[in-house]
Image 1 (tube, rainbow, N blue to C red):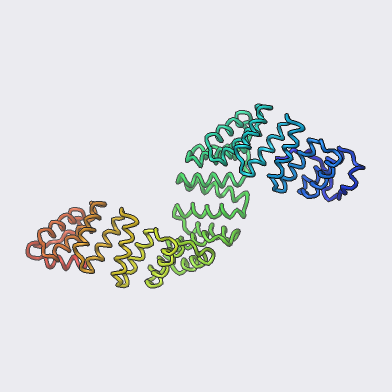
Image 2 (spheres, rainbow, N blue to C red):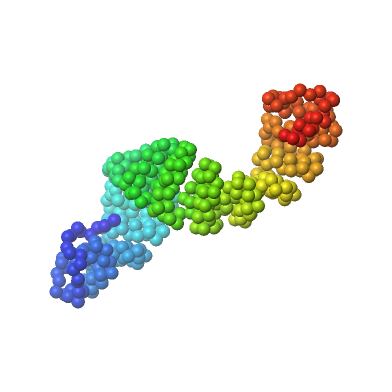
Length: 452
């Protein structure tokens, strides 16, 4: 917030503080203003300090020094000079507001709010004091209080665009997504060139699953700011979410054009090519993602999945191990590793990986089933039956689990139990039923089941 007077002078003029005694007060203040407005804070500070030597009781000079220190990012030091200005002029609303902003910038939000309240005691309807109170409440994540402030500002001035913007943020945080979208919409009616507002609205719409509307918002953000890398990235996500993978790839490429260090853009391009079954191209992009961020386990997992689909199982296992080293609690990686180990006949290792999967996720019925099948291959049928029962408990209509139980019972020559399991499997998947005399041909049934 800027409270210097708007004065047009040549900002390149050089001022010698040694000449100050020859200047009148008004001229000096004008020169300080020029320096401040043009970002020449160090020069402005020198001139103010010289001025204060001659006029040590000037509230305005202390105020301007505080503003210049704020401009330099020295908010803690600025507060000292706001206090000096306030001691000389205790009823100046702007002093309390700007001191509050400095306190907010140093993370002293409660003290900031107290200063805004003091300003409001002097001028009850000051919208800047109310608005900045809302910002401090927002930073403390006291969103209900923040919303009350922003709505009060809008009651005073319904064209206060920034209040709608902050309302959009608060409602988003509170998961009141419709209210968030509406607030951003009202802000954009007043300030249609705010690319951040278009972008934020797109994010909220994306969270609602309204991908087409999100695309419109991201595209508006890009229309205002073509090099907005994050908007390109999220536009790619939205197109990918509706299955337009090629369009998504195109957007991610633009994101990389404007931010070529974004490993996640490379990762998402790789994922898109994976979905398109272009595994070699996907691997190249996963390589780029890993080069930029070797701590992203998802990139190793994705690359491993590409190698798996190419039949390069050992390379896939290496990548899964790299991913697990970064995240030992991601059950899907263990699951993929287990399946890959089964593909290369490393059954005992696969069993250990399946064991890890169900330890991490005891609701994954497919993992229980595959684990049981691996145990059957290792002739550990009793253990397999326990896992198949757990699988059926989670998903009672899984025909394959009953088939596997039938196979185990037949191998144990418990024909009646095997037939019972087989009948249930046929009820669940009647298209599989075939003609056998179950009492006589159970060995043929075993052959059928083993070949499945």
